[in-house]
Image: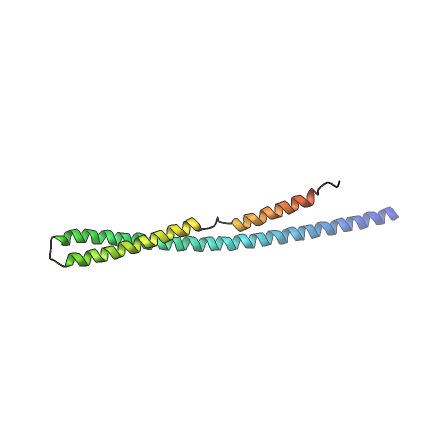
Amino acid sequence: MSDAADRDAGSITLRGALARLADALLGLLRTRFELATLEYSEERERLSHQLMLLLAGVGCLLFALLFAGAAVVIYFWETYRLSAVIGVMVVFAIAGAVLLWRRAEIANTAATPFAASMEELEKDRAALSRTLNPPASQ
């Protein structure tokens, strides 16, 4: 009779331990998923910001090219139009170069996407490894 009671108590304890383990794993997965979702949204925002800067920079450089062509045409026209067109061309060229430089700077200094998620998963793996393989007692 006592064997049956011990088996029932052991199975309840085992079942409870498995339930707590499953609950802990689901909580851990939920936290990691939330972190990955947050990093995804940050990465998406960073990429859209870079795309806007890239398009603005390319647009400004295209305007500079347009005005450079207009400057060549106007060069043979009257006297002060050339200075105005070249001035506008220089302004757009500088603006385009600054925008493209800023985009490249952002791209070069950006963190690796999902680095925090990978770091947390590595910590989880190390903790699980320590738990499953405790150091041998001397």
